Length: 427
Image 1 (cartoon, helix red, strand yellow):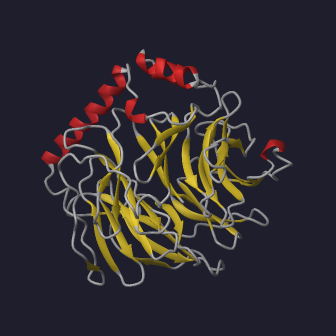
Image 2: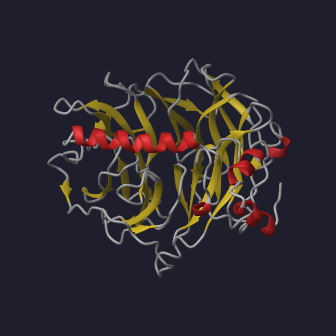
């Protein structure tokens, strides 16, 4: 459904944005651009209560556990730089600034219902796809496409892409046609031409591993060579990663497994989980055969569980399990590499660190966020975007950016409600 500018303005005047969103839920057309997310309000009292209660619960948790804000201890081989914390006061929205304005566009899932774009200088923010409960939003390695999962035909969940090289014409295009009720994980090939995904007919069913080309989706499955590589016995796949050579797809389901793309062979477990939780959040360092992931560990002093940064070489897939090298104990839940592979940003539930992979130093860039930070690098690797509250008493997630050295911190949004998930930063 397309709306003219006058219709949009009348809709806002009548405070009926959510009615429009609900009406569009079953549509696949993108909302016209230039819709200001900051102007969106809600009549959903339950939503407000849930968000507010989350903030109250978080405050109570922090008061009860004064040790939670302490950063994890880095091993002696790592040299920490100075910690730079974000200000605890309200920060004005930035104006367009040289050096920031040319650093691309942020994309994220807003309120679990829409795909949103945000200019990296904070100058514009739009909803580019409405409805379908989008999830697993992920940027292609070449920065030209967004892939995500949303409702397709009927109750089926399918993979869609949005080309970013078509100016402001953000048109979602279908990729998959499995007709299944669940897609659990996505992974791009290194050449940005193929997507791997894990799918099952039901919400708790066993997952098959599929691949599909991003071109020819209109004639799926033959036009884009959609195929199932292997049917697994796994009911859950936390994450997937495709090696640079395009020969193996790796997936985490408690342990890490590998799938041979040429013949669909599923290898035995490549890692040994600790028993405290799964090995998770798979990621390849650019230009290497080194697979990085978090290995769940438990802090005996605090009782905290989280990810220990671990790596394994996948150059030789002959002896299993692979040799694992354990590194920094971040107790992390999320990590991303910079495009050039030199830096890694790793986040705990409330903090984030940038690690220089060449000189072995780490700098804390986010401390005590009110929400999981979900940090991502800018295309040039110099800035980090993350999620936090805008004010110390404001329970609404906002997008911030900061340099990888913890400097030049800026607030980009002023949302009045809603959630932010699957943050990405495109050129």
